[in-house]
Every structure is written in structure tokens, then in C-alpha cells.
Amino acid sequence: MSKVYVNQWGYLPNSPKTAVIAGNGSDQPVKIRVINEQDSCVLEQEAVFFGHDAASDDDVWQADFSEVTAPGKYHVEDDQGSSSYSFQISEDIYEKLGNMMSKALYFQRCGTALDEKYAGIFKRECCHTGKAMQLKDYVNLQAGNISEAQIQMFDVQGGWHDAGDFGRYPTAAATALAHMLYAWELFPESFEDSLNIPESGNGMPDILNECLYELKWLLKVQMADGSVSHKLTSMRHANFVMPCEDHRQMILFPPSTMAAGAFAAVMALASRIYKTFAPEFSREALAAAKKAFAWLKAHPEFIGFENPKGCNTGGYEDIDDRDERLWAAAELYRTTREAAYLTDAQALLDGVNDPTALGWTDVAGLAGWALMEDMMRALRSKGSEVIERDCRQAALLSEKYVELFVSAADDILKLSQQCGYKAAMSVEDYGWGSNMVLLNRAMILASAAVLTDDQSYADAVVSQMDYLLGVNGADYSYVTGAGEHAFKNPHNRVTVADGIDETIPGFVSGGPNGHPVDEKAEWLIVPGTPPMKCYLDIWECYSLNEITIYWNSPAIFLAAFLNAVK
Image (cartoon, rainbow, N blue to C red; front, top):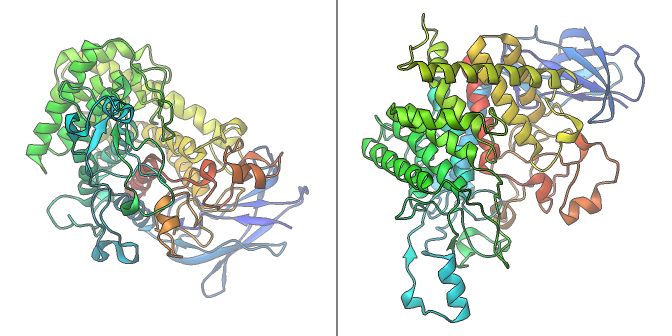
């Protein structure tokens, strides 16, 4: 029996539209029919046989129905009697998706009640209002070496829960914020609608309001000497309870150079973004960025992080901090135009592992965004000339980054073309958080599209979002609430404990994992299952189905890009 896959959320009228048909080993011709909501056929098309797709172990046909442009609701049928899920064609399809995924971050807010006016049925009580203590004090207190009266306590209320747990992690936060702040900077026309959050209507775009909630918390985990705590969690993950029922002691863990670098970078970025909207915060953010960078300069050695004995919350370990230092230097240069920061960036660039990476582990590509930002904004506004750099050194670095991003995009484009589902993934890429890998690569494609105006890169971005939203061998839309067969059971303490059948919309799943490590997935996934199909919509399967802020943020960036270039 064949299977017909489409983007279950929908398509822009003038974007590429591809249905994928998976068959049973035959290479015989396959025809598809596009059916509208009046049950009329608007297009009959012969699909093109792609061949065997290794990641899904499917024999695959691809059917281009891009000529269907009229707004409305449709589905696709093949001549073997199979039918796809329904989808929409609409001008605002990605604007709505971006808003939904942005609003999902409101539901991750910590340290505040979510009122029914803004949260609807997902309203909940305030959580995690207690103060935190530093790890060394916690250990000494447990050992009986000091009394509670001797411990300095820190106000750390606020921010976003990072993922399905209640921890808050500066490196993850900085990366997610960067994706969203650059989305606003490059594609502001995609963020006009209200998100219906408490700050709505205050004169600031709601995407910036939501980011500011996280940024203000992030300032609280910088220490007096400029260092930044690597993470804020309890020693052990909370049980599957509502956040207000978690009363474990929150702990500020020791600083790391990765956290300080990412903090300095995102604060410098935020300083220029909020200069008009929140000038006092803008000044505070820049001062904090400079202080963190000064601490980094005073500590040129790598200061990493490992969980202490007895701690099972997220580690966010890294083995190299040169990319975070590079990103910090680039953002501080872009904000201040002080040559010393540019010299630091230039010295660091050649030593980073992956100069175009845009994830939380490797962030060197975010430095590229900072150095190319003037150019990208000018190209986006269709200016007659690219903004002239104030120094030749900066121009050379920017030009080098353009070459790096375009070269990386070409490699990603080839990966996409080698997959029957057009996913820019090799068989080996389906690990924990595979959707993050795909989305981060799509952001590189989007960057190349802006820099070159080459439509092939933009079309490949569409294909990656198609994969996320249903054109994949697992047959799921990986965004809650986005499609008829969207996943519904994320590994998320709130959605498990709230007793509500409906799922909070707009969360992005980690996606299929060819090497699952949670007990449920190891038990249920049959050995030898193709990696693209190693997925279960079961909340216990954290190595497949967890959500996190930095899986939402690249999808928000890409939705903004597609909405802006339509």
C-alpha cells in the first residue's frame, strides 16, 4: 500500500509544493490528483520516481503541484487509492505558524502565573519563586559545614523553562534568543501580530516582549565578577508535576567560559535591538556584555562544566569555548564598533571547529550573522548598495563569512537533493534532536538565500519546513497543533501533569532518533528500523519527543524568512 505525504500545515500560494509518495518496491508510474474542499480535482500530475531513500528505506516518488496557487483547503490522492492529510494554501500560513511557535515560549515562562486571559485552558499558578544558592554553599550545607544563615541567596525568578524539565540554562537561552532576535532584525514584517501575552500593546513588538522576559532573567545569573553561572537547576529533575508543585532547592552552578561567552554575545546583540524600545535595558545589557567579556579576557583558559556527583539535570557540556568567545567578540564589535573586539574576532575565527554552526554547542555561525548583519539587512531592503563597512578589516571578515555560508549552503543543498523526502540529512544525522540539525541547516540555506538571491536556497528551505510539517517517513507534523497528524504527547512535565487532553500548540519535537536512549523507545522501536522512522509520539520517549526552546527558535526564524520572501 502506498502512502502520500504533504506539508500538513500548508503552503504559500507561490511556493514550491511537493507531495512524496512512498510505495512498495515497484517503480511503475504513479499519478496524483489534487482535490479541493469542494471535492473537485484541480490538478492531475504524474509523479517522478526518485528511487530508494536510504533514511526511510522507502521507494519514493515526488509529485510537483506548485501550479496550484488558489487559497483554500486541499488534499492529494494517488492512483493506488491512498490519500494525504489535508492542508491549506494561504498567504499567511507561515506568519500564523511563526506566531504559534513564538507563543509556545510564553507557556515556558517560569516565575509567573499564566492567566486565563492569555493562556486559556492552559492557565497555571506561579512557580519557582524561591531564591537560589551557589553549589559550593549547597554542598557545605548538606555536609553540615555551614548554617543556612551563612549562605548568600540569589533572586533568580523568571526566564523560560528550557525544555521538558524546569531547568534554565544560559548557553541554550542565548542561542534561542539569538535566533529570534535576528529573525526580528532581518524579517520584521513577519512579526506584526499580537501574541496575546501580558505585555501586548505596550508599543514593543511581542516577539521582543517575549525575548525580553528571558533576557531579564539572564542578567540575574551573572555574578559580581562578570562570570556567568553555567546553569540554574535543582540537583535532580522534578517529578512529572506542575511547576508550582516543584519545591526543590534551585542551585546556581559554577561559571563556565561557554556561558560567559554566549551571555556576552546575546547581551551585546540585545543592546542594539532594544536601543529604541527599552533604552535603559539596552544600556544595562551592554554593560553586562562588556563585564562578561572582560572576565573572559582575564580567564583565557577553557573552563568547562560537568555535572557533580548526584546531579542528573542537563549538563550542556562542551569541549571548546573558542566559538563562544568569537561570537561575543563579533557581537560586541557590531554593537560598539570598537576595533579591539574585531581584532579578537579575527584571531579566533580560524580556530573554530565549524564556522557556520548555529546551534548551542557550536555558535560560530552566529558570529557570522553579526559580522554580515549590515550586508544582510541592506540586501533584504533591496537597497541599491550594500552598507559600507567602517573598516577594511571588518569588510574582509564579512566577505570571508559570506563565502563560508554559501559554501556550506551548497553542501546542504546536495544533501537535500540526495533524499527522497528532500531532507538535508544523511542517514547518520538522525540522532537526539535530529530536527534541530535539519532546522539549523535550513537557517544556513536561508542566510545564503538572502546573501545571493539564489532561489534554489530558498526553495530548499521550503523543503526542510515541509519535512518538519509532514513530508517525512514517520508521517508526523513535528509541531503541536500544526496539521491533522501533528504529534500530541511531548516529553514535557507541564503537558503531562496538567490533566488536559489538548496539547499546547506550537512546540517543536526533537524528532526521530536512530539511537534512542530512553527505556520506552528502546523497548518499542524494533531494531533495524530506518532512522527516519525511529519516532514515537509517547511522552516517556524523551530522546525522541522532548521539546526545548532552541528547537522552537530556528523554526521561528525560518517561518519569518519564508513569510518575508514569499
